[in-house]
Amino acid sequence: MSEDEGSKLKITVKQFVDPEQLKADLAYSLSDLSNAMMEHSALFAHYGVLASKASRQVDDLKLLLENVEARVYRSIREELIEKGEKVTEAQLDKLVTRHPDVVKLEKCLNEAKQVEAVAKIAVESMRHRRDMLIQQGLISREELKGEISINRRNEEERNLERLKERYVNRITEAA
Image 1 (spheres, rainbow, N blue to C red):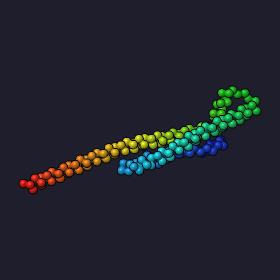
Image 2: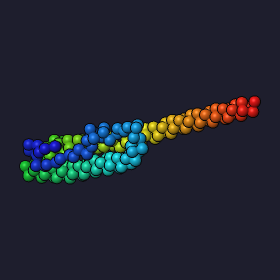
Image 3: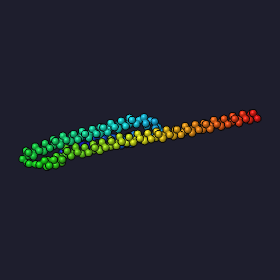
Image 4: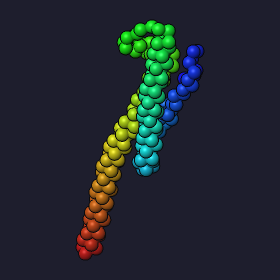
């Protein structure tokens, strides 16, 4: 976010997850399943770190908002006291809530929460990717078992044919 008019605060909410890169990182090829499985833990860790940074950004903005609200509250209260005006706690709270610095920080906090939600979704997506990789690995293993079984059966059939041929040859030679 950029600086608002009437606000002295300069707050920037950092975007941690690039949606296009996330989409690319979530993709994998069935022809290169082993490589996808080997890369997965590094990707999961990467997006976990980004989610952690996004959470810290939210916490930092909450702390900053509390401090700015306290500063604004004190400033408005002192200003009204100097003018000799009496104001209730509820009125003061409303004035603080509408102050440009507080509004700006609340907007930044909302944006940071949205960034944090995206980062959490990225981590959850990596969990789904892991589950899919595991399932594809099981399927590939079963397919390989089937191929091995078929190859073994074919080899047994070839051996049986050779044995029959030898047996027929012996019988023919003996006759």
